[in-house]
Length: 137
Length: 364
Image (cartoon, helix red, strand yellow):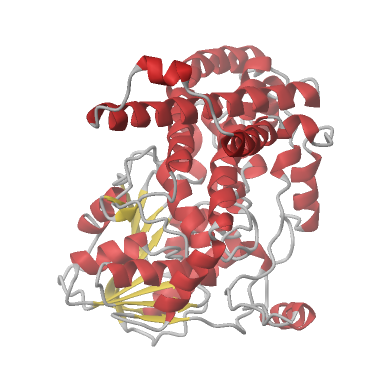
């Protein structure tokens, strides 16, 4: 059995931000997320190409003919497929989530910790500490 | 071990891959577009909506249009709903990108933090048995795991806020400016400084650089943030003490501190705790000591706020994990400081996006 790692992390309250719905239909929300993700993926690729072209040109290695006629190996194809699938997973993740109507997630977080609760006091803190147990690991 | 050393940007290590750097670059660019181009339309649109929706008598106690009225007008509006949608998408994209890659290199970051925990200069004092109150367990800014629940919270916060600041704070520029302009005791004596809610210690470190002869301590409840803070201080060869404690229970000696700071801490705690923190600072400050607080405007100060700013403040609270923001801005923090015993006044903030600067002096 692996020894637990000392992380100083403890329990937290999940805000559920992946389930927010702002628009008329959760699917429209998902489509907006997809569009923004696509923008990021496009810029990531474009920025890498800018770096690549600068580096290769500085070494005298780059011509447009070399790029157009390049034929990837089977290994490269496999790696590129992995990369393609990662991109698909990132861009379209929002469409694969089960939508929740309204801002139920934010409401749930509030219900768990209502704003009008009584101020903390040492007795309450002690009781809650005992209930939760050690929180530092 | 995988090599993820890509050099530095100023005094911050570059992100571990070109793709992540580009992804965060997109996040920054998108955010900048959102708060300039998109918001220029939103401002005009929301003023029109508010004027139509709010009768003159429908005002909150501070003279502004009531939040309920604004919500009734703004919530169903397609342009405003789209603004909220892309804002949260932008936030989530920022965190998802960082967490995805940092998790991939988790072992590397773990080893790095482990290696620094017990070395100096400076000291890291974690408190594994400290009771972590619920109020600070939220995913503030929807950061995955919040400040206490993710072992890589420090790095996530650092690079996430670097994107939030759109590249203007990559070398702690804002914190350094804040430290340079911090209010000081009238006698000029600053030999012990305490930074409350210090997080990853950006202001704490800047204060040590500003007051190199002083004993500088950062206090925070979040162990993962403090571990990262200590690592940064060691890298910068600064002798800073980081303690995992509650700001309302610092366990520091009474009357021992010349200058205490709290940068954007108070809107992250309930008002009852804010009062306790103020009382604790009053206790640990020496007579003539100063408590310098930078945080949002509260209560009466908000009457001149544009309608969309009021709505956005609520949305930040409701959607962005700012669990206590509305409670804080609805309070009168200047009055709380005065009720604690401080001689307190407002000064213009040193930072444009957080107003104002509360300066509280413990009477001699």
